[in-house]
Length: 439
Picture: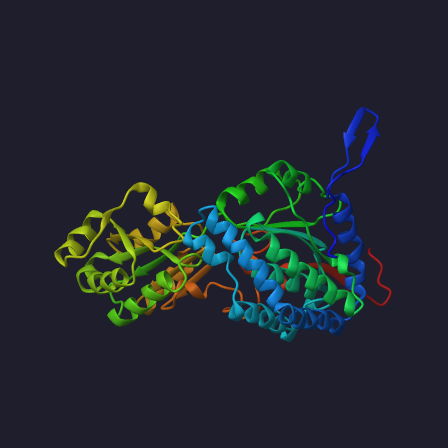
């Protein structure tokens, strides 16, 4: 069985009275003990563990889908929204994608032991920075059970132990996945305690896990804004986070119509329930009559509800397209649904000002035929991913060549944007000498 959290916890007596032992201390201690064993293992052994994980997921497909069907049905009965059910649901292609994602991580070069920025000092010392594991990572996430294997695979490849806390809605699915992953590690001689799933109850219990800074080196929360803010406010451990994905596409004056339509459709409709879906469309006023009706017609045909500013309303009502009036809250909204906020702006400056005020530093894109405006947008927009003439849906670790990602950070310490293997390592100084002493 995958190590978990016990139902009853011992009571111990301290100097100031009777108190309960932190229920997650044993899990965290086990993870801490696994780290040096992973670090001593060869890259080939860690890769063998990941390959065995992929095999295990394929072999457990029927059991996993059965558990997931129970999770989905329970969530549907509880009244979960369609976007939530989509994130929760697994099927044959998604299970295969989980296995393939692990194998893609196997194919990536290991960052561990790599020495970067080697330089020779005037006294002959050679000074470099070596990539090392971060240690123990607590990964706290909601729904999307495929994230369980993504996170575990990346952590193991980078030499880290991981404590997984998935949402209660996906608990059955996550238990099967975590058991498969831990068993795969044991089969290749790696510590199964490097992958542990914990089932937490209320937020008070979650806060207990977040106090274990003597064992855990980093917390990565991935889910709704409420969860991430709770983690950030209650953790004694450093937290890498992004609160939400309010992603923008700006259609510049020179944007080609066909490209604008295709990119907006892909960014909004392909998978609206994820954080890299477009939530706000900004359109240059001098191109609005040319671009906006074509884009809006395609989106409305695909079931999108448009929340528009007065200038956009005037243009779209003339085309007999259905719209709703946008409120101030719409500009801040992460809909995660087939809803889109639309605003006509005076130009690039106003578009960038809108993104600064209402954006979440996640992902922004410009559609333009003007090279100068494209470069200005890239340089001045301070988000973790900025694209030119491409869909916001490419803001993803796999699509950007990182392999599976563990999350997206919109804070800048120590990672910014999609997080892959390198973002799960630290760098220590290494110094090579031949007897030098300091004067």
